[in-house]
Image (cartoon, rainbow, N blue to C red; front, side):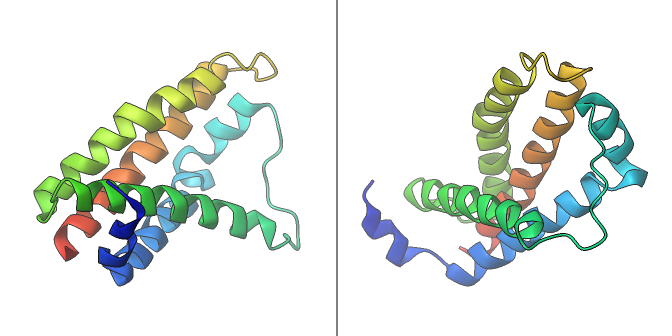
Length: 141
C-alpha cells in the first residue's frame, strides 16, 4: 500500500463515517448512557463547562477523522466493498487496534478510581464507532 490510495477513497463516505463516529460519542458519553459511569471511573467531573471551547469538539472530531481515514485506507487496500465486509473491517480495527491501545493506557492509569471501567467504556465506544464507520465505508465503496 502507498499513499496514492488517498486519491481512490470515497471522500464523502469518509466524511459521513467520521460524523457518525463522532456523533456516537455524543450519545455514548451522555449521562443517560455511559456518562455517569465514565465520570465515576475517571474520578473527574466531566460535565462540560457552561461555554465549552472549540477544542472540546474539535479534538475528538479530528481524532475520529484520522482513525476513519486510516480505516478507509485499509478498506481500500483490502478491497472492502460491501456493508458486511465494512462491518468486519471496523470490528477488526476496533478489537485489534483500539481495544488493546485503550486498555494498555487506561487499565494501568492508577490516577483513575476504576481504571478497568474507564478503559472498557472508552474501548467499547471505539469498537462500536469503528464498526459503524466501517459499515458506512464498506457500503459506499
